Image (cartoon, rainbow, N blue to C red; front, side, top):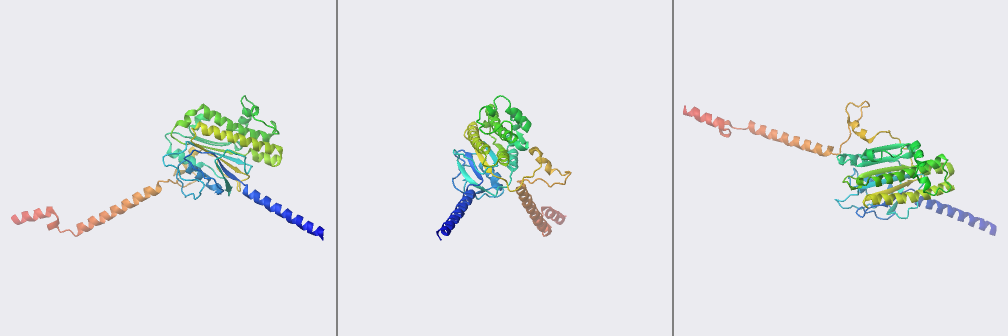
Length: 362
């Protein structure tokens, strides 16, 4: 009898541990972490979840831009009207749900982790500050995807983009291989080199920004969007419990912490640095590889694919001006025609009045 009771207690204890484990996994899931932010960009600490598809709108609001739909999220409060950060840096880390980033401003759970792009924010920056040529950089080293706009074409022209260029950069002087503790990571494994190449890109971006410090002194805001998937490859190859994955996770956390501090200091403590950690996206991202400069060709009426005209946010304003102006002119024409039709030439017109007096005199 006592054996049966002990077995039941053991089964109940096992079920309780399983439920607690599942609850812990659900709480410590994908996250959106703010590494650095100026004082006038107020992030409130709390557990308010943010949707993955709303991250571009959240970045636009932190830069002082307006969005099409109101973002009813209490984590970000409205800031001063005439102050905006000089730059926004968003780093997306795939393959891990959270990183140990102790020196962060705030961290929020990420729900609905769908793929997203910063193209809408980049086009807003380009359209509002076209004359100032701001820096817009979107980079994914693992996919060899690079989009540069404005001054980024001149500043980051020496940045290694392809995997072959990055691996060649790792063998040069001043690479991260000679300054970072690799521990269980290997210099010959393909997955390890992919992860180290992404760390090298972060190092090179800060080095180029230190060389071109004048970028942080202009009036146009800059936008950086980086996507790192080296941890995802390490998890797929070695497993999430492997020493390679644990060492890479700790290394990336320290590198991102220093990267955020360097960028924040280079822009005079007036930049926002966010990190999105997602274990796996719910749907694959399918996009056409194109430069953001080609966005204007969409509104070409002679398009080969019969694409629609590009929507302009000033369309509603122009439409209302033209509509009400036409209504006012139409009412004015109707009023003038009505008065002319009911006009008495002998009393309402000076021409006919003088003509009648001359006829009477004759």
